[in-house]
Length: 389
Image (cartoon, rainbow, N blue to C red; front, side, top):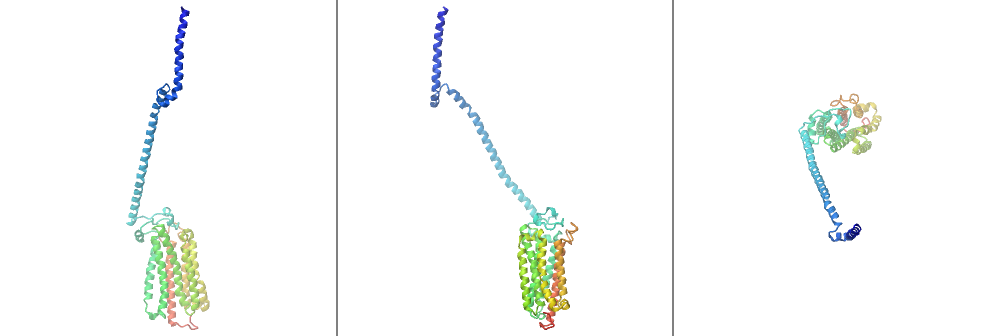
């Protein structure tokens, strides 16, 4: 019995196992085809589950990306909103500053906080005007106390003085002149050069704190005015000193005009006004003024020292030269503030002394020329052996 049942069981159980294995192989071979056609098979459920499971993290990633994009957009919008706000606040502060300047409610500041284009003399430690982008505020600062107060008023008052003297001289009756038209033109050139120099100077010291561009423009006018003053000062002196030598007079006038125009051209150089070129500026104008040594020696040798210093008024012209040279030297060396920094911030600084000496020298020059004119008038314009050139 046992031996009979055994084979039966083996046969019955063996046939189904082999059938199942064959079905599995066939389905496995048909799996790709079933997947392509979208029919269910044995391999399909696994892939379907994977595909169903995969969208979940993809959706989460997409949502995260969308959130990041929205955050970036929000930050960009905030930046876009913040920039105009910052600009608006900056404009408000600027308007407030300009309003304070406009109303004259500014305070002097130390040299250390000045912008570079306002830094000129590092021995003046305090009392400087801040940058004031308002011409009204600049002109109102004339009546305030600061480092430029003395520089402004010395040449402003000098401007008024020579304007008054010029008007009086040109309005003198013609009977006091040998050749009224020529002589009034000669005096007019002197007064015009002096008035231009002094007016350019006080205007520059008034508005140079307005802005860098305005400072550069008026500094060029200021230095050009110095050259104009030197040229204009030579005209009446050469006219009366070489009254009877028109050829020599023309030569010297031509030379001084060429040198003066050259100095004006050099003054247009942007770096000419920089503090490191202070000695260069003084040297240019000092050399221009000293060019008068040649006609002076010519005059002195021809007329003799005594006659040149008395009738020829050379004593006054020598004093004028000493004043100009002293002023230029003090300006270039920045004396006295060099020896006591901070002690001459407001008054008695080198630039103010230079201004006073310029006005005084111009007045001395006018006095000497006026005496020369009266001497020529006393001779009735004659050129005798005893007269001057």
